[in-house]
Image (cartoon, rainbow, N blue to C red):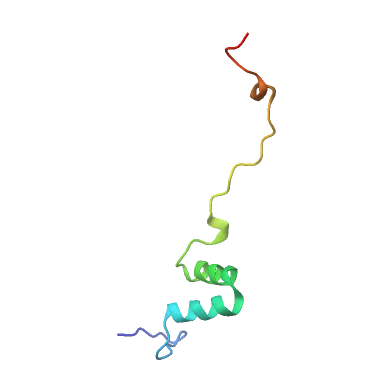
Length: 68
């Protein structure tokens, strides 16, 4: 059973998988990932957790403890 609305017609024989495959072939993995985020299938790149900012080594990082 296919669902159609007035603004988004369903093309016979087309699926999300086929559409995403064609986007990936045409635009590459980045375009496919962005499209998946826009469709709500995968989290968008902005929603991904980021690593903490770089912290320069402090003086305590270089001391050897337990040695005389």
